[in-house]
Amino acid sequence: MKTRFFAFLFSFLSGTIAVQGQLTKGQLMIGGAGSMSVDQHRAYDRATVCINLSPSGGYFFTPKFVVGGELTYVFLHNKDQFNTLIRITPFLRFYIWEGNRWAIFSQAGFGFEKSKNRNQRNRLAFRNNRVNVGGNIGLAWFLRENIALEASMNYDYSVYSQLYGTHEAGLFAGFQIFLRELKDKRRG
Image (cartoon, rainbow, N blue to C red; front, side):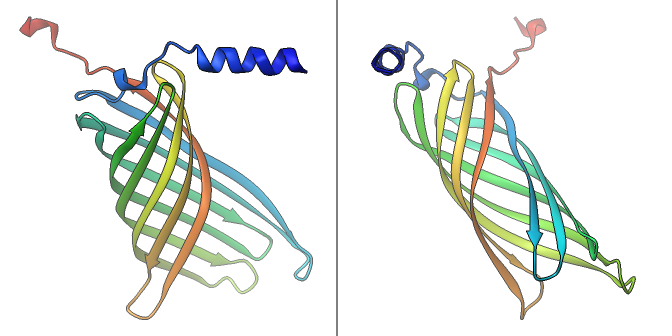
């Protein structure tokens, strides 16, 4: 056990990858997050399946500052309901602190959602258009020079109408790949 601990500690402390080289102007950032959950509701005798996929991409306009966008797709289904949601969210991300293999970031976004909900029992269906405002703070761990795993605490507020809105908070995990900007070889 001690051998494993010291091997982990040595590899962690002797890492040669510097995050500072990854968060530079002109780089592209692509990645995303996803989740799947199955909830069993005993009171209603039903299970709910929820799938959430969120690919994202961005561009470093200055070191540590990313402007990008995210496309979120959510699918929720149980024996009574069938719901889908699509959200487009432009975002701003700033890397607050950089370590050897770690970075802390903050992100804010403003998006638009379209959802479709259908009740299986009475065949009622309705659609919603929403405005979404959200933010998160997270930690990126660079596994390699250009690949990072991320964990973040998120908060979102969605407005359905003047009278109704929802608050959501949660923990998310995802990844990012950092690519150098492709230069046009014809320009020299």
